[in-house]
Amino acid sequence: MVLGAGGKMGPSLVQLARRASDDAGTARRVIAVSRFKSPGLVQQLERGGIEVIAGDLLDPAFVANLPEVPNVICMVGQKFGTAVDPTTTWVVNAFLPGIITRRFPASNLVVLSTGNVYSLVPVAGSGSRESDSPEPVGEYAQSALARERIVESFATAQRTPTAMLRLNYAVELRYGVLRDLADLLVQGEPISLAMGYVNIIWQRDANAVVLRSLGSCCVPPLILNVTGPEKLAVRDLAWRLGTRLEVEPVFTDTERQTALLSDASRAHELFGAPTADVDTLIDWVAEWVRRGGRSFDRPTHFQERAGRF
Image 1 (cartoon, helix red, strand yellow):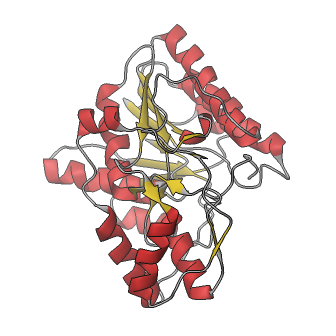
Image 2 (cartoon, one colour):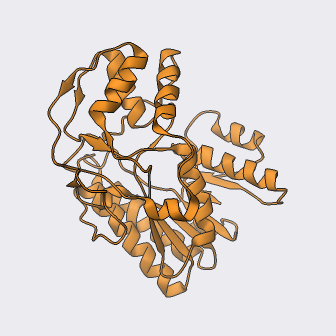
């Protein structure tokens, strides 16, 4: 059961789970839970053999009536809008995951977190590791660390096998750092180099790690960074996209000596390296944009250094 399945990653995650189960010949329920605000999404998921439960996870009665299942993935969260509505961010990111953890004490539990719990690190290094002390900047990142602490407390007390995944910049054709850069190029807008380096991972590969983590849940919780293996220069990504889109990039700001970067080698050792390399992702995104492929129109704000979202 995937809680918060109506967001950017959730629909593709539950469909991947459904296909994997069917290919394995395993009789398994795949349940998507969300408020489902996107038109047509419920019908799309149901056509794919996914059970849909629509409702508000902040409603205690709704949560209490959810079915008992052996595996739960918690994807609920709020990032954008924190600057104007921090209260909701804290409720969704910290309070609600605690309720969910207590509701499913006997399930394997995977909780999506974020690499924003780390501080900016020197770009000369390999990025933050799971053993590094979190130093969240801004209320969004602080609420994300609160989520981890609250889940860890309840999960350890209950002996709930858990994994918490600190994700850095999943990308797909409609959303992500590459789509942000491509849109700026096509629109003739300057590209900021204030955050000069990033990590990215193809969303399908990120979803695969989420599902595989169900088999690695433990007490106390397993913590994993989830992103690609490379430290990528934003300037270089912009030029490579610009070549394919036949647009010359215009830059503002300059690269700093620190950036939000994570070392995901532990996840790669457990589950293998991502299947989609950066050149392939650039080709896919550029071609999608050239064809006028639709966007979620939700910029990642990866350039943000002060934690204001």
